[in-house]
Length: 471
Ligand SMILES: Nc1ncnc2c1ncn2[C@@H]1O[C@H](COP(=O)(O)OP(=O)(O)OP(=O)(O)O)[C@@H](O)[C@H]1O
Ligand SMILES: [Mg+2]
Picture 1 (cartoon, rainbow, N blue to C red):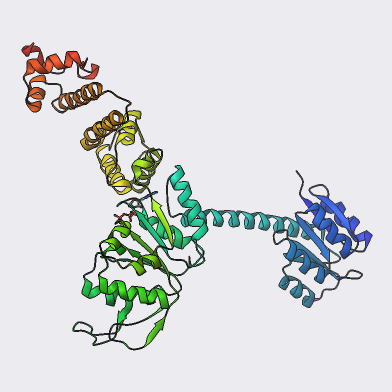
Picture 2: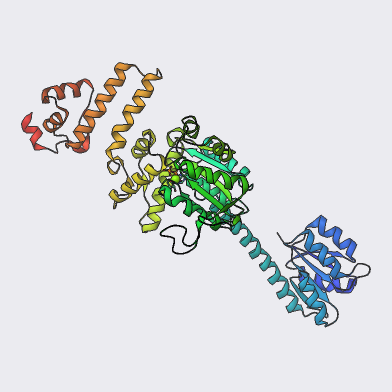
């Protein structure tokens, strides 16, 4: 499709010659004055405008400003009758892409038009890319398409921009810190500091000076004045991790800052005002701590204005394969290794495991699998730790039985079958060794294998002469 160029000039002779030069490549539309030009600009949305500086009524420079205000992407090239530098400078100041003096040179016209259009395209690409980057960065690599994660994304977008305190809760390793960052990078404060402080990692004696800073000489080790995290985070976000671990005294001080948005350094007298957005996180049940008198109720209400709950990974099963692939490709990219994927069996194993350590545990397990699978085309169950193979079945079997989907008898058989299979695999199908491992006789093992219809996999068949002797 040809690009559309709007020609605005009161002299029909000039419009005709512009048209003659441009038409083979572009489509042109024409207007004889500013009024008509603006109407066509709105109606036809041209890709580029050639605009005469001197027009009857509203002049070209005034129209230029209107056009730029309406649409900041379509470039406007000014046609100047005089060789006046001043007009050209004004035009550029008001956002013209370029200018051309009349009488114009045909070749120059072509070049200027083409250059302006390319520039516009580049500009559009840059804008798109920038938006993409910000978006990716904004969600800070949060992976997951399950409903709970989508709800989290929506909430992040909704609350990011306010200064309201947010409390993020969820089991260990569910991604609380990542969500805190996403909140920050989605807010207007994104270019301001994001300061994270782990309240559990610091002894009570240090946490106060860490939070609020101290004046020189305020305690034995205070040899110099120190700026605290609250000051460092000014105009940005302060992430208070493991907030449930704060001592009662620090809780009281924190409450004061949250109420008054000001504090004093340890050993100081002067109040310092700050504009800090607080995001707190904990894997503890704060309500329970409040009930037990270990967490101040008033502080709890101050923090818990907006609550974001991150459900454990086992409750967002469909994210498991996604996350696994994400962590794997990240490592592959880092080490420049040829691409790998998970076998179906491996994905099944990952999907059945209850992930008590949540996403962090998965990251570790994928890291191990990444190492063990070096040189393999794909990641198979043998590259995954046995805990996945053991832990899995029992929990799901248990769940299935208690939910009435499976009879107890079947569940026990299934459990037995998996344990026997695992023992066989570990002993490379040497039945005597497997029986020893399981603490039963070889005869008993053989009997159970027959009942449970456990055969020997084709790949292992005839692998051990020892078995042949035993038979
Ligand atoms: N949705 C997710 N997408 C990608 N990576 C994630 C996701 N959730 C967590 N992670 C990763 O898992 C690890 C643990 O996440 P994070 O530190 O945010 O958990 P946490 O809830 O703060 O845990 P803890 O309570 O133990 O401090 C991090 O390496 C993080 O990058
Ligand atoms: Mg954390």
